Image (cartoon, rainbow, N blue to C red; front, top):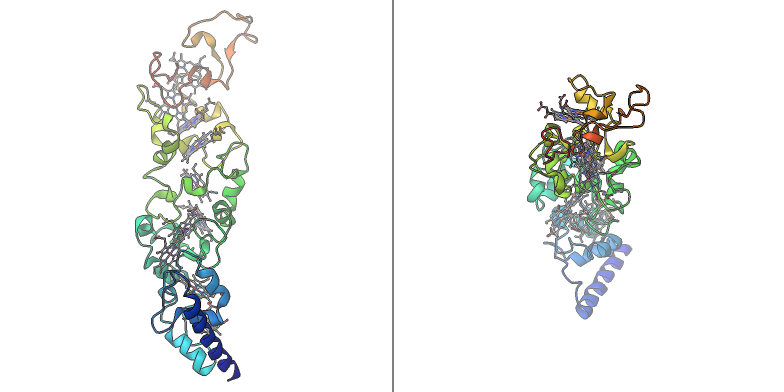
Length: 304
Ligand code: HEC
Ligand code: HEC
Ligand code: HEC
Ligand code: HEC
Ligand code: HEC
Ligand code: HEC
Ligand code: HEC
Ligand code: HEC
Ligand code: HEC
Ligand code: HEC
């Protein structure tokens, strides 16, 4: 009883203070109760909340009807029911947030891999105590957030050739939209190449001589997350090319420079099978420089 009287006094003082100094800006009232009264019992949550982008949303917009909760507290000295978003099943948390965030890519949240696997809005976000400067994430950076679950991707980012994600110049969301269940692998854009080509525009073409796999899918040759081969390549040369061109009439192994687009050349080892100037097996690109397609006069063979 004593505590209740204390609370009543406190609430009175608070009301007086508010009259004297004015209510905090942009805070919305909660129907059935004055939002500032939540502060008497939830000071930390309240103070932090009023500085956030949700300040203008009433507590009830996420926590449901608060009148019973407050009445129980004041009359019986124990809290009445309230929606505890920290302990609700993922689907109910998501439904709460989606009452407002249902436009743009968020429309595609339902049915996406994250949703189906029980990853909820609050797996990544905290509207009360977030650590990121942008986007109200639970972690300081987005990469840290995604990597906390996707350890294998984090490991790939540590490889020698990688996109500058760990350097902080790019993020997972440069290529993925974690809310978008509509595209395969939640890729930004309608397909992989569209995403890659937003930055690597010089590979867009159209070229006079196209290389079919490049048009089809950049990931046939590149691992976007990282590789220990040069240039994010999924395999070492010439094995990369030989994944598809192994048994064509044009052998991938020893190939004489006499066959280059420039025609035969005289070289120191000419005539000697060991020292002859054969283009080493690593060297498909020595002759086929325009792997991504080109407009070279040498024709469809992707040379210059
Ligand atoms: C008289 C004190 C009092 C007032 C006023 C009060 N609460 Fe509470 N609230 C409590 C207590 C006590 C609990 C239970 C805490 C626990 O279970 O750890 C609680 C629990 C909660 C929870 C659940 C926390 C959790 O663990 O998930 C929420 C949300 C909440 N209150 C919101 C509000 C809101 C919004 C208001 C204002 C409309 C409000 N409270 C007013 C005392 C109060
Ligand atoms: C935009 C949705 C949203 C609004 C609006 C909101 N909350 Fe919450 N609240 C949450 C979520 C989600 C959690 C679960 C913990 C988390 O994710 O941060 C939570 C947890 C809490 C908790 C328990 C955990 C803690 O941080 O102590 C309290 C108390 C609370 N809210 C009070 C309030 C009060 C008071 C208001 C209004 C001033 C309010 N909330 C407005 C979404 C909201
Ligand atoms: C009552 C409506 C409402 C509800 C419910 C709601 N939000 Fe929001 N949210 C807003 C508004 C308004 C903004 C301000 C920015 C904007 O206009 O989108 C916002 C902004 C955000 C932002 C962006 C912050 C930034 O830095 O850009 C995030 C993240 C967010 N909300 C997450 C959530 C989560 C998670 C939930 C559920 C726990 C939730 N919201 C529930 C209305 C709501
Ligand atoms: C897997 C992690 C993850 C999940 C789950 C997630 N988000 Fe996000 N969200 C992010 C990241 C990352 C950003 C971008 C932050 C930035 O701008 O730097 C973001 C941005 C946002 C924004 C601001 C920009 C925008 O797209 O409008 C809102 C609002 C938002 N999320 C709401 C939600 C809601 C609602 C849910 C649940 C339906 C949700 N998020 C689930 C990671 C997540
Ligand atoms: C440069 C663009 C790019 C960046 C940056 C990127 N991804 Fe990806 N990610 C892709 C592409 C493209 C695929 C699809 C690969 C495929 O289908 O072969 C993919 C696939 C995935 C998959 C599905 C499993 C797999 O290995 O195919 C996960 C999980 C994933 N990415 C998580 C992440 C996380 C977490 C980050 C940040 C740490 C990240 N990605 C950064 C482009 C990117
Ligand atoms: C709370 C854990 C968690 C967090 C945090 C998380 N994810 Fe996931 N993610 C999952 C689970 C679980 C799956 C489904 C199983 C799998 O493929 O690993 C998944 C799948 C994916 C996929 C593959 C989709 C497909 O179609 O196969 C991508 C891409 C992805 N996440 C990107 C991200 C990005 C980007 C972030 C950060 C913004 C992120 N995830 C944060 C748990 C998480
Ligand atoms: C948001 C912009 C962006 C997107 C989207 C993007 N990249 Fe990149 N990419 C970069 C940047 C920045 C670098 C680093 C350039 C540098 O270091 O000079 C890079 C480097 C590369 C490299 C060279 C790596 C090396 O070790 O030199 C390859 C290969 C590459 N990207 C392929 C891809 C593929 C494939 C995709 C699509 C899955 C893609 N990129 C999507 C920005 C992007
Ligand atoms: C048939 C295999 C193959 C495909 C498919 C492919 N690449 Fe490449 N890519 C390579 C090879 C080989 C190199 C290394 C070239 C070198 O070392 O000079 C490379 C290098 C790169 C580089 C870094 C060097 C440079 O030329 O700028 C980028 C960026 C790149 N590729 C982007 C892409 C994009 C974007 C796509 C999809 C549109 C794509 N690649 C599809 C084989 C491929
Ligand atoms: C994922 C499979 C794949 C990989 C890997 C690949 N290619 Fe191709 N390449 C093709 C296909 C398919 C064609 C089109 C064949 C056709 O039109 O008959 C082609 C065509 C070519 C052509 C032109 C041939 C012609 O008749 O038009 C050259 C030259 C070529 N590739 C060189 C390379 C080189 C060099 C590499 C390694 C950097 C490479 N390819 C890697 C699938 C691949
Ligand atoms: C010494 C220069 C040279 C090297 C090295 C070279 N090529 Fe070629 N390639 C050519 C020339 C010239 C042609 C034009 C057609 C011809 O004369 O057979 C050609 C044609 C091709 C063709 C199209 C014709 C066919 O046979 O299908 C493919 C595919 C091809 N090369 C793949 C490769 C691959 C894969 C490698 C590396 C393992 C490679 N080339 C190494 C010069 C070279």
